[in-house]
Image (cartoon, rainbow, N blue to C red; front, side, top):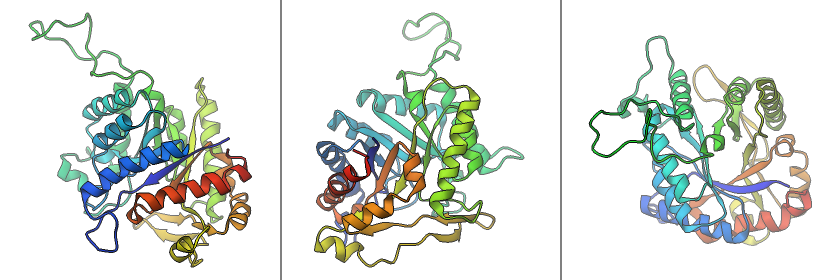
Length: 340
């Protein structure tokens, strides 16, 4: 059995070809899609976070609203860029959203990807300390967030508070028990996957990772997952970790599907550079008639290793079409592969 959810980047553009023409459209349609996905029996509604772009950005209002409108489906991110985050404020917002959702928040965080502007986190008031990279800063922010989510007191109370305090040092409020175990790290390399395991975070692995061996993407990603699980075991954590991978998968079951995705031009991995130093491999997309699609996906080693699959959705095609995309996978593909 495998959990299956969707991952939306929340793109919007005023173009007449888009069904999502404003930021309000992107937000409200995201909530509608989460509600519809829950009704279909999907397991997760996840949202990507990008700054300075016509995409979803500040996630917690969206997560809280989606959590209030649903009752079962997991609500999450994949991922929040920790270079931009105040970890204490984030702990409060995340805990509030989790409480509204009844403990269903699955918070994916990471160093982030190349952004729309140069060093965008500087505009948010953050900069690395001396000798620290922006990636180091993201990991430092992450470690503070994890500490805050443990719910332990750390702040000295005032001797003359406005309201009575409980005894001892004070913690951030609200506190949501269990959220610390539902933090995921989006790892782009084997080393950061191992680091996440040591800190007791779940693992998110997307359709992009460092090209570390020259092998096909799904093989490298499966190796990353195995390295993560080995590091988790070595760290001595007592719970079983979760691992998600994301994929663009489209079952071609009608003419509209074939028009949008039947061109066959995304069937190979691609190599590129996400910065001047990092060679990356981008995983292929899958689009085929159901029988062929089942055969192709059965060969994907990383999907087999993961317990959670996030389907990246073309959100600008509208809620109804994206419901169709998710339903086609749940109906035609998942049972044949033993995911359901």
